[in-house]
Length: 150
Image 1 (cartoon, one colour):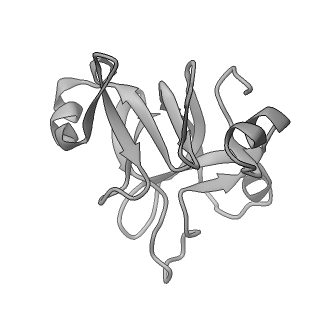
Image 2: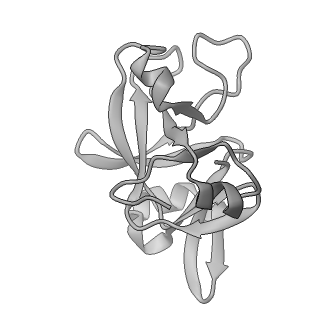
């Protein structure tokens, strides 16, 4: 999973101003793209009763946090990080291995509230369905979507 897109109309004006350089037109509708390779990598997150933009995962090799944009359900269940909180990352589209696909509600994620640089968010992954593997060129994992399976 390397990116998501959210309709610009779903972001509050204050948050939209912070990511105006990430606006794209998809068939006449403005969307904001949040991609792992952006600097800084950010994701919109419903956390603490509001929508926030949080740093996405960790790109630092020398960090107490797992490196990467996502954690598997197995890692979370094994307790790889303490004190995490489950959240929803709102999204209309997901991007994996060059393939954009429709998302109905959003993606499950976890926020690590206490890190040396402040809170950050990871997307949650599970084993990919056969359809998802075929759609994405054999990706072994897929995001855990809210009320949806691809």
